[in-house]
Image (cartoon, rainbow, N blue to C red; front, side):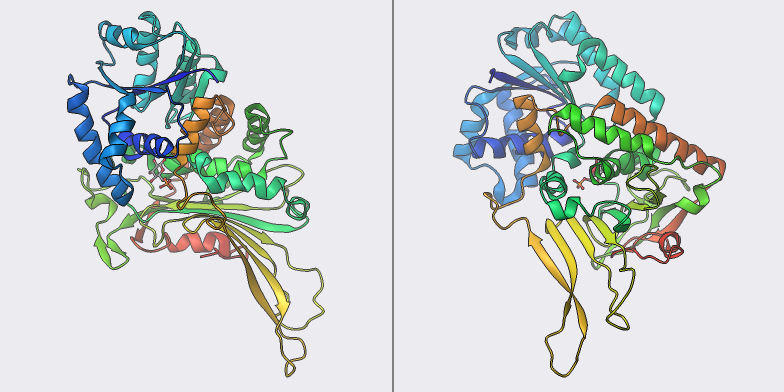
Length: 482
Ligand code: BG6
């Protein structure tokens, strides 16, 4: 494999300290980084490496707790580092970076910056001849805030990089359990053969968060939970659940199948939006015994009212052969009672019940992505009893992914994604078409909500969203899993 250098723009930002450097450090600890991989931390502040590193170390220690690097580990990890000060919008300031780059090696540029800077940084890298060697680029979401702006971002990137060199991160794809979804579906014949509308009644995807908006009011209020979570993370999960088997694990193959699902998603327009979408916004309440403020009382809020949703539930349909008649219920929200990501596959009831009252308990497969990563399958069995002739009960087959792991922890998504980007494997990164198709669907839904003035209903922090979200599913004689 070619030698790789990693150049992180936005190295002194929050994402870098919270996720990127800790992930790189964990890879170093596991001996998974190439011996000669160099890291350039690029940020605006004019300072030396010796000034940059202690600040980074302090921030990492606060995020990593007991897992933080020891002094020896830190000394060896930071041997790889250089610090390069660049004002990103000033082409004259790229000279030092040009000096640092080595065109004999692969340059992996990581943009941990606001998306508005992607295009200017690419342009300045190009005009200052920093893209002369073999280059790749990694970009973070959001890629745009609607279809039009996502096309603009993608166009700007494609002016300088081939699609094969663009790595768009959706960190959910790097989660171990999300990858396990592929294995569950395509390496287990009994699951694969029962994966369609003949056996499955409906699918639920829940991404619940206990946190609020974490000091990001001005960003979040323009975006809301649909753009922040559904357009990317929930859409990716739905695609992995619903797609046809790809013919290989190559990026192209997987992306082709995913994009077909997004295209087959039934549009939600102003005729159907009231029946299919529930929006909510948290008011003050309690999470695990701690009082938390409402959305409009969060730090940074200077408004008396806002229509931004912090919760959304959607009933979606995929109009294709496999999923015809199988609703996908999606829900995600901030300040919910639990941090949980799970996919529930609810199987159909049996056509005829020979065991008597209450015995027709349909199977349910719960794929837990976080926490307690694993799979639970509810099965029906006979209660061991001589007194009761045929009393049935539901049992759980519980597979805990942490058992049998070669690590004593579940790796963070960024560890996998860094490894793959360094090795040039794009299969867990998102393709341009998927993003644009997903925006097309979300834009229409947003437009329909506006036209019909679908309100963001208040829900108390610590509750599972507004009561109407229960109605969304219960009117179909179904219920949310938790
Ligand atoms: C990010 C969103 O993409 O994902 C955040 O911008 C959200 O608002 C976060 O909190 C959730 O990620 P995770 O990995 O904690 O589920």
